[in-house]
Length: 418
Ligand code: UD1
Image (tube, rainbow, N blue to C red; front, side):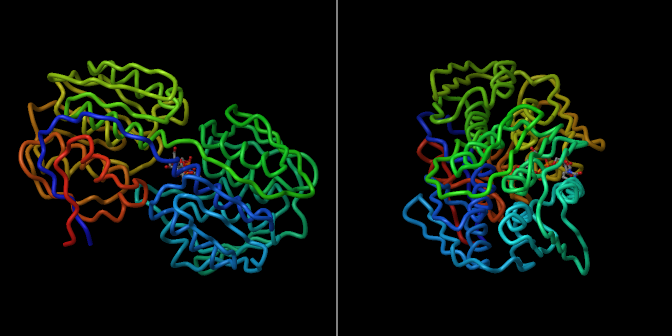
């Protein structure tokens, strides 16, 4: 097990290039087996979720070749429709495999998916939608077996704009007979990226980015060479890191419309933000002000994946902040760790009340989930003294070279094997 040793209190200065979006690349990997032609996904981030997804594709019989950051998937020999529980339990995105396996083989058997322990995360919306497309589903011994003779386009209203369910429905509908009309769809930019990828393969998908997506089933899908969108959550994490530590940082590559609300919140804190094309520059100096209220919502609302990092920022701002988590039930599990560093936070159900303290102090903390872990790193970067952030396995799922990138910005951070 690895840990970070962080000597806090250094200002951050410099420029950082954003990786491709984890939450885009993972569904694209799943989409790659929709065709038996060669698929290349360029500039993939070196994160463990990507390696795990590659392993899932290999288990299905696909050849997955990494050439630097470019990954080529050739699934012409894939014949297996089953994913072992050890891999699905490690990665929630394995649930997307249901949609693509059904399109490719009309059959899929997968264990219930895992991922970060941040709430119940049921998959009822995914399964109900698949049923409407003509899929029979049986659940036994922790496995889900999906089968159909053919997939038929349908009208699918979603009760909640689930990102994963929206993506899974696209993957199951691309080659279905007839037209699928999905209403109440999630509007996240990663869904637009999936639409663009599928259309580049020859699919007919329109409306992504709005709450109604229309998929006209096509007979064939071809290969594709695709560069995914950049990671708005990684970009946001670096911007918040600069807000926490003070300094001047330029984040390169991300579309500022993808993190509009974060930029607004950071300005509310007292940071100066300048945007130009795909560059966002942040300046932070002196003690910042707390945000009065941060409430997570589906896109274009405030992203739940930046909630923990913003809470860490507010810990040392002036005043008090209310943070409301609407998406996942237990996404405040990192709070006791921040308290070890001197944070004054009270959690009541889905709401955290933060009272800003002058500074945090170094402590030994455990990263229990991906974004909560990132929040601890940010808190440690801003804290007085040395902190250790233990267990980097979750952080490694979503951030490539986090330590290297922070070091380039001037942070004092070492990765150590425990
Ligand atoms: C995706 C992102 C994750 C992000 C989340 C919300 C990926 C790989 N992960 O996760 O980083 O935090 O969107 O923006 O893209 N729900 C149900 N039934 C379902 C599906 C979801 O009740 O069948 C609930 C979930 O429990 C949760 C809420 O809907 O409370 C949001 O989940 P969803 O949008 O599906 O998130 P994920 O796709 O899992």
